[in-house]
Each structure stands twice: as C-alpha cells, then as structure tokens.
Image 1 (cartoon, rainbow, N blue to C red):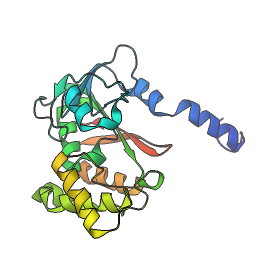
Image 2: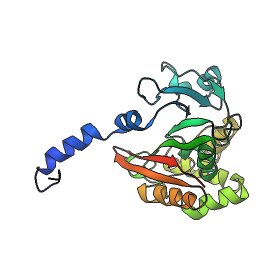
Image 3: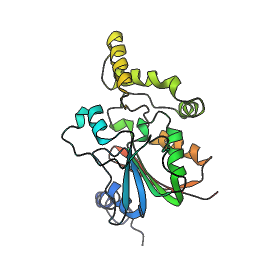
Amino acid sequence: MSLDENYLPHRILRIFRKLLLNRFSLAFLYLRGEGIEVGALHNPLKVAPGARVRYVDRMSVSDLRRQYPELNGKKLVPVDMVADGEHLESIGDDSQDFVIANHFVEHCQNPLLAIENMLRVLRLEGVLYLALPDKRFTFDLDRPVTPLAHLIRDYEEGPQWSRRGHFEEWVCHVNGVHDPLEVQRQVEELLAKQYSIHYHAWTQLEMTEMLLHLRGHFPFDIEVMLKYKNEVIYIVRKGGA
C-alpha cells in the first residue's frame, strides 16, 4: 500500500515531508567521503559523521571580515583553500567526492562556468549539493529573473558586459534607491569594494532550465529537486561520458 494522500490527511503528509526531506537529511543521505564547500562563511552545511569537508573561499577569514563587516560577531568557518569559487583553479579534475554550493551560485558572475567547474572537480558518481534561493521568497522579489540567454552570453563572452547593470539593478531593487545620482554613487562604491551581490535572480523554473542546459554538455543526473522554505535544493550526481 502506498503512502499517498488517499490514506493520510494532507496535513500529516506535510509533517512527514518536513521531517524527512530537508537540507540536513539530504546532506546525510548523499554526502560521503571527502569534499569541499564553497563560500560557507558562517553557515556551513551540517554533514554526516565521517564526511570530511574542506572550505573554499576567495579570501582568507581576516580579509572576509574586512570585506563584510556585517558578519562581525559571527563565527566564520576556517578557509582551507583560497580560490575563486567560479574557477576552483587550485583543485584538480576528478578529485572530490562531493561539492557543496549553498547560496553561492547566485553570487557568481558566470554561473554556467561555476557549475561546470564544480562538476569538473567531482569524481565519477560524485555529488554536487546545490541550493539556490528562489527570488519569490527573498529580498530579490522585485528583480527580474535572469533568462538563460543572458547566462549563455556570460559564458560565451565573459560577464563583463553585464556587470554594471547587475549592480544598478541591485541598488534599485534591493537597496530601494531610485535617485539616479545616488544609484550611481552606490554602484561605484560597491564596484570599488568588489562587493559580492546576487548577480542573478531565479525562480525554480529558471534554475532547472539552467541545469538542463548544462546537462546537454556535461553528463550528470538530477537525483533530487526539493523546494525547501525559500530555496530549491538539487542533488546532482556526475555521470560517465
């Protein structure tokens, strides 16, 4: 007999789903061996005992504290490897059992390249644990979604063509600034600091479209897609040729 909505009230089923399906249970089920988490800052993913995680970020802890004073008072994870999270240039091909990227890809100027490099460093059958915020439930609510064509152009031409526009959009729709002079002042300030904004904003539909586009060029399977609170979590397993 299947456990479906013909046998249990909807409310009980929802409770079961919340208890059994969440970001931590997926980590315990799928993450084994040795891997990396990119951009964990003060919120690393809890993993099962025995899973070994090394933390990758673009700056040392001391530099991160200077860059993000709003994190003062929060405990940051130790940065084991300083590397650009989009390129993972210091990490070898086929070297990791898992890669964790929680709320990181939206900070990438070139998301397709970033996910491609995460898949590159995974061993065959390795797992990418990818969580992305759904703009409908975050401060990105008023921003337009980033279409796939935009991401493809970022990948093919480099993201410089769209960089300033993303900062203008951030200042207008997230910071709520509409005076043109003040918009440009804040954009210049953020650009000078190389501040890590959400360059891109998606709903579940556009996230999935992005992954399916990549799947046409890189072999992997999406084993789980879970809408959880304000995010969508994907468990991606790297496949063969």
